[in-house]
Length: 360
Figure 1 (tube, helix red, strand yellow):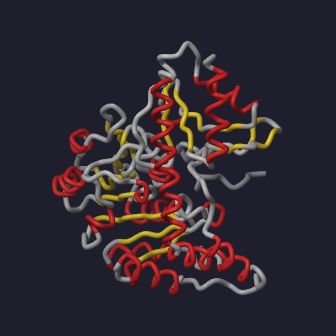
Figure 2 (cartoon, rainbow, N blue to C red):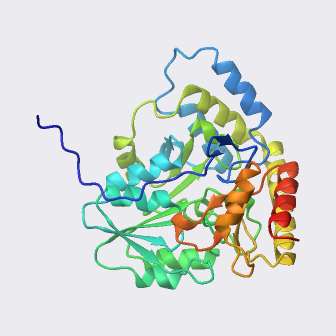
């Protein structure tokens, strides 16, 4: 009996940050860049209200949330698209703009979803080399060919935590051909306080060939609800909306996100907590002679080349203690781990256990 034959898909499967080690559920999960403090209490209240009536379909266009986002960020609501996480928007972009044998450029170390959906759409993915874990605009431009269709960037970048200054970002858009789509992922922009930084939305909200994406999974603490959004020209958003599934964001997610984005007090609390601990952890790693860089996100990339111990052993020893970090092998970064800034107690326990493992 002949069975249905699938396409020959050659793509990197996304492996998420673990929640368990073997049969053991992590007590402290610092592997997925989730919010340290969790969702706004206002968002939780809205979720609980709506959860009493699950029989109703959500608004297929998310009109209310789009209006709230447009008011907060001074945008045109008709140019906003909502997704089941920003991941879905990346998927739709690839479906809409990439044909077989097109080329897509991503930084050497970047969010795996970009290359995954690009390859599923038939593209050849080109990796632009970074300099000291910083995205190089010159190297991106040197990768451009006649076949280049899309450039994906996260700013700040995941998994390195470094960012591209606004002058370089503007230079990139000016140097790229107008028919190359630039996609800027603003997932971690709220954590940045660099004077030379501007978010993609602030720089390119009026651009006709840039898509900016944002997420509720990080600073807003709604990773489990899957809400993201994108902003671009009407022409591009109209194309993306043709491929967007109906009811792709649930009612509880829409209501919780609407409450979360307006709770500026909670947002500031999260930013202050993460920035304080990011600085503190950077100094601790420096004293322990663990290589890292000053991060502009809610995580730090740490390397153990200067220690007489492998990242594999450190990961395993931490995991046995119920503390999970993110392995960097899948990103091609050797002997390194990524640690998310957690609650204060979680950070203290992680640092204490790490010191014991490296005999400090």
